[in-house]
Image (tube, rainbow, N blue to C red; front, side):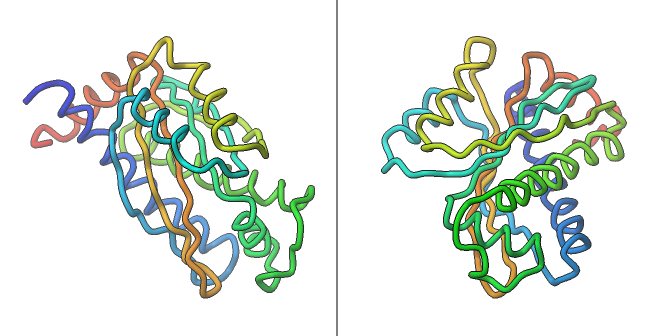
Length: 205
């Protein structure tokens, strides 16, 4: 089996385990029955994803950027539409849906906290499941149009990497389904560290 196929399998395994871990962390944090459902995972060419993003109707989103630092560094991006971010803010603040009317410092803090939860879930998988030393940096929250935000994010790493892991999820909470997207972009060499570690611990992988 080619190295690319092994990389795809390794990254999808990390994505699946991470979403399960994030869902548990989220439920514990807000003290309500909340789940994060994994809709789709794909290992895509950056150029193709960028073209798709740029070709869709531009919309304003709120994003959390996180650097996952350690033995297998990754870039992490989570984003959600501004309107849906207000519902997520109510969720984090334990308010009734619809209480938050505009994006303010509290809504920004809520998105930052979600970035913490998601990045911590991914880091937890690296550390506990695969014994790879990793830690997340504090999330940086950005409110901007998707094309602008995504282009800036991609341009920082596109010269070094040509693939990214796209994770489409739905937050199911407070009677609402909120679509969100996450991108995990390995720094060159990180995929091989992950594959080697999985193959060592799981020979049947």
